[in-house]
Amino acid sequence: MNQNTDGIIFDLDGTLWDCTPAIAEAWNAAIDQFDFVDQKLTADDIRNVAGMPHDDIYEKLFPDLSPEQRQKLQKVSDQLQAENLKEKGGELYPELKETLEELQKNYKLFIVSNCQVGYINNFLEFHKLQHFFTDHACYGDRNRPKGENIKAVIERNNLKDAVYIGDTKGDYEASQQAEVPFVFAKYGFGEVAADVQSIDSFADLRKLF
Image 1 (tube, rainbow, N blue to C red):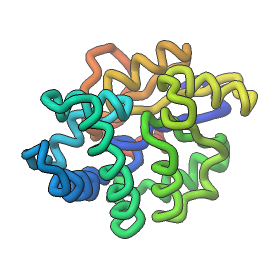
Image 2 (image 1 turned 180 degrees about the vertical axis):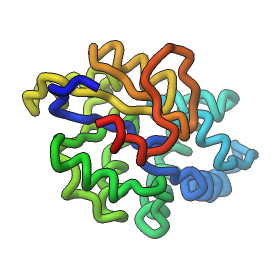
Image 3 (image 1 turned 60 degrees about the vertical axis):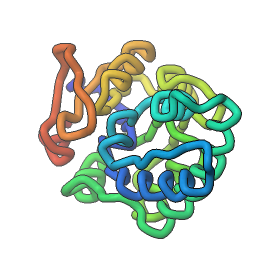
């Protein structure tokens, strides 16, 4: 990578952790509270929509529901998800803490995710990772797309040569919008067809930077 890199910005789901089992469990509990929806979600269902804006996820997973029904389901799902993540958290990718510790010695670290407000904080607090990250931004802050949130983090932290690390096509497209280099986390949830730098494990970042 560029030897002048001064900031590394991470996607969250599929890049830093996998909490899809806990999310599926919470959303299924929410579904059970309503008679207008009759389906069960799996962790794979959640992985397949990872990285999408929250509202788009509900449109894709529940296409037969009305906007009003989706809104009701989303409100309960978000509440149960937050409670479940606080209790159970998610699975960090191997050697994540050790790798963050090494990277932090030379770079400022950040998170930008298409999640709701509080989700990143739940991740940081459950795994006690707050001290690694300088700043973060999410879709729920101002309902802004990921590319704009990457730009916002870069601007408010005066970064000159940042890089974005993610695991989906949407992450790659956001990096293009923000005009920053992209590193594809091949171990995550998605696919990226573009010819870009990639890593097979989170620990590979120690070789890359």
